[in-house]
Image (cartoon, rainbow, N blue to C red; front, side):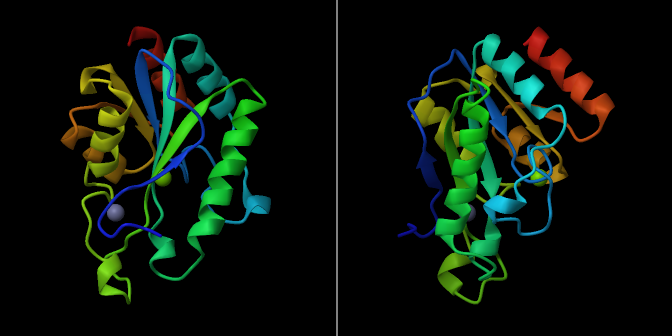
Length: 182
Ligand SMILES: [Mg+2]
Ligand SMILES: [Zn+2]
């Protein structure tokens, strides 16, 4: 079902927005418990909902950009991973935050299956971001990304997208400032 070497796109709803906010998943939106995939393990981190409500009011559409190499390592199934994303989208929608899609890399360089090793989407590569920009018809200058890892920053830089690291209270305040000034 996964097209080799390509980004997997899980659509939730039509993209709406004048600008796009790219969201890393694990460690940014939800507690990173290591190959997290069970819906019962979904724990949205403090500050995330308020931040995304604000982003919505400011006209940002939202897209997830997440490395889920655990699927290529046999840690969980693609279906489980998609269900976890759906649970996030559903929790967001209860707060009027619209997540339009999840762009997912299911590849991993250490996969036992050679066909799942190489790709152009696993962050720090920019494949997920560049595809989403095209799909949503948004220029990179109208995009902002948040994430907790250096690989998120590198992917954003490669796609010429502004990036803000998050994770601590101070960093979330900086991200909020970025939103307001964008
Ligand atoms: Mg992360
Ligand atoms: Zn990939």
